[in-house]
Every structure is written in C-alpha cells, then in structure tokens.
Image (cartoon, rainbow, N blue to C red; front, side, top):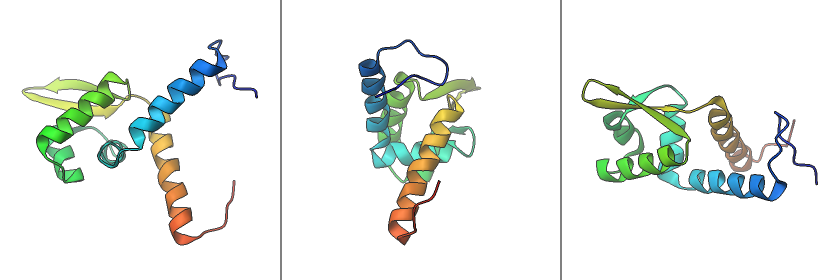
Length: 113
C-alpha cells in the first residue's frame, strides 16, 4: 500500500495511519464535529460556538481544548475573548467530505467522484 503524502512525506506509513486515526477519532464526536463545522464558516468565540452546538459552555471549552491540543484549531485573543479558527483547509475539507458522505447515505444518492 502506497501512503506517501502530497508533500513527499518521509513519515513511516504506520505513523501516518495512527495520526490519521487520531484525527478521525476527534471528528467522531458529535460536539466536536459540530464545532468544526461551525468553524468552517469562520472564526468564532466560545459563546458563539456554545450556541451553535447546544452543549454547555464547560463542555464546549473542554472539546475546544482537545481540538487545540491536537492542532486542529488555533486561538487568538480579541480583548477578553478567545477566538477560535480552523488551523488549515485540510480540516475544512475533511469535515465537508464527512458530511457529504452522510448526505449520500441518508438520501441514498448514487456514488460519484
């Protein structure tokens, strides 16, 4: 199985797979997926993200901390607020593709490239 990266990665295939499993595991949580989906639309603070996913502020903060530690989101200070953003477009595309697969399954749409 050839698993070379788009940028000529020299990381062993097993390590790449384990890292991918970790990223996909983070997306496998409903709250985190909703948070990432909202961040696909642009930066947001904790209050906005809490409203978007309907979870408690404490829960949202804990999920955001996991996403930040995993390197999927970044933060910046805006006065007293902490503003979150997706770290890069790969995460946005991954979220959109996961939701597209769900759309196809739910609507029983035929596969396509």
